[in-house]
Image (cartoon, rainbow, N blue to C red):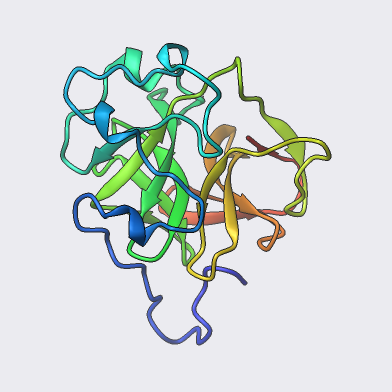
Length: 207
């Protein structure tokens, strides 16, 4: 299945961590991580309500790195879910050298960025983006089997190494809603929770 090594007896080949802020040429398949360079400085207010114009396909994002201070509530926006300990969970995308994966971000975790990958809750160190949820331009829709609801444009959350697009998903695990990734090629959604990767084929949500 997608994300798992071809040979089960071998250790999973995890993606390489992105060192710092990669140049745009690394991510040239239409995904636009982070904010315009003019808004990378301290004091920027990237909350969706403060942006002007229509959002890009990947939404207005807050660029972050492991170990950096977590953004203010004004920047991060409202949580999309709460963990089992009631701590807030946000949408994110983890930037690797050859791919970008939708993930969950939790300030209470160290590191805060967790990616469903190779059957595990992969702890990402390096560059990642937080996507503030904007109810004025975004909605969660129930779907199954990797389908994109007719007439809707999903928010682009990233892409695989081979170029297939990935989108943000939300599924329920042990009574907790968990953000993750979906794609037409995945045939469902994958989320990271409790140290593992959980796969859902039906009745999850796409952003």
